[in-house]
Length: 268
Image: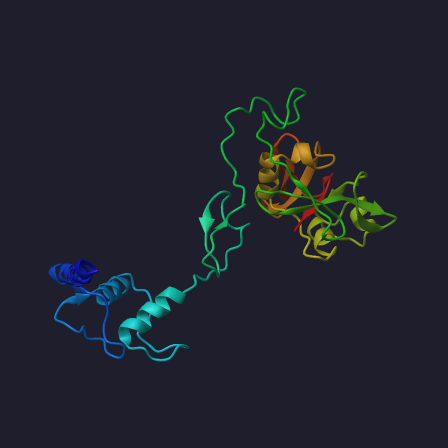
């Protein structure tokens, strides 16, 4: 027992001497930012590191005022990253933080090169895998919705049909419409243009742009939307007399005069 009493003080002295020899002490006095000795403390070293990273604040917080060192350390420890991104905004597989110190993983798909594509999507031998087609989600969030493109996030409507003078969305039938208000179905609907035919459906529906239609083809409209093998009007004008259309089965795009009648599909 006598040996044990001697050994313990010796160990304690050795530990303390070790801390002093490397120039650090464990902590400051509870109410003072000044180390008890002339050595740099672990708390001061931590404080300096946090300052270098521009984290935390010396201001008092909900815990009270613990002095500049402890205030900064406490506030840095409680900091939570903020942001407005959702998982659907961040590229698939990428990690990020939003209003939490728990990592979240992005789910947004992005268009990528398609090295295996051998045919137009409308070709008899074409298939979704060889054409890098994405799988679109069936969407029923609003009346008239058909499917959502996972790459762009755009929701595509069913086909626009003239139902006894009233434009409606239909999952299988179709009607042809002019870009301007001169087509027979346009006249029957009250002399509406293709842009008006979509916007007046409400729920944020609008006539898609030429490039939105082209991107839909790239993402696999031929394999996901009903009756894609038609030309569809876009909202993109060439001039006062002409506008662009896109075929959703082949990706072919061109412009023609606005009185020509073709199909309309809306987007939101």
